[in-house]
Amino acid sequence: VTRVRWTPVALVVAALQMVACFAKDIEVRAPRVDAATQPESAVRPEPTARMALLDDVAQALLSGGPDHGRAGDLALYGRFIGAWDVEVTAYPPGGAPVRQHGEWLFSWALEGRAVQDVWIVPARAHRVRITEGPRPYGTTLRFPDASGQRWRIVWINPASHSVVTMTARAVDGEIVQEGIDADGQRFRWVFHEIEPNRFRWRAEDTADGVNWTIRQEMRVTRRTGVLKSSEGAES
Amino acid sequence: MNTFIDGLIADGPAPEYRDALMLYGQFVGDWKTVTTEYRDDGLRHITHWDVRFQWVLEGRAVQDLWITPPRGSTPLAWHEPGNRYSTTLRIYDPAIGAWHIVWFNPPSGTIVRQLGRQIGNDIVQNGEPDSDGEQTRWVYRNITKETFTWCNERSSDGGESWRLVQEMRAKRVVR
Image (cartoon, rainbow over all chains, first blue to last red; front, side, top):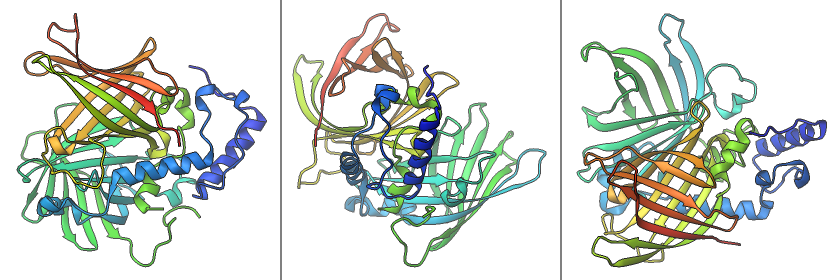
């Protein structure tokens, strides 16, 4: 593995690139690094090409609504489409609770046959200054099975290199996502007290199938008001 | 920009594993493929695919779309045979020097998990054997900046020999 050499010039350019990135304005970008100073593989396309590319992926991935034929089944998670603010409390074994603020963004995907979300903790607005501790920035993809009664779910978090597979169903107005972790331990993530503009969420596991221990909780509130295109970002 | 896309899509690879991330990062962009499926009855079935790769999640992951038939104005029903409107999520795991790969195709109700690694000039993605002991691997070969070949191969003898069941020839779409 070759390492990027942090020459003073490279550091300045990297800083400029970060600024350009945070400004969330894809077309205004820092000057490109001279190709000779970078491995060939790291050379990026020109900004205009990148913009077109981004539109292509977004356009193919996103959907404005659910697949018409299965709108009923899809509503289980479809009701969360939008942007949410998250207050997370983690309960580490033997330690004090840890509180963090995050954001949770849901969208229709894949011709309205799936719901994909992005879960970011700490929220991007605070991420720059909070550099210690866990910094999950992951995505969940989910779709209903043929019966419409169960959803297949995968949560992926590159920050901890984890892939978590679950099955979900509606239970008495709640959504219960169940799975088995790498150690064979049963766990469940539950959406509860679901209202149009707020819900709660908890993660629990059990060793004996009877007693459940809460590991993490969230209070989730829908973002409201007129939003700019860059809401949630630092700009 | 769309709020969700703003949170999902990244501008390039995360700096800490930049070189490793380029294994799939090299495909970021749009591709068209001509795909040949070699059926058990000896017939060949040709399809066309629309494939798009993008950096996501702070540049620590790649998400791509694999679509056939390419969408025009006529929508396809959910369970139309051969309908693929699928996506792959890939994350690099430095602890094992490999990529966790998850492919989702809602129309067929399929989720496939694999581990992807560079082997020589190829990228090989291996899955767990199924209940009959049949193994499947997806391999990227002949990789250039503008082209690659993707092969879906199966083995019934524990990986001693592989037979080709599907081959895609991909060309980058230049805009």
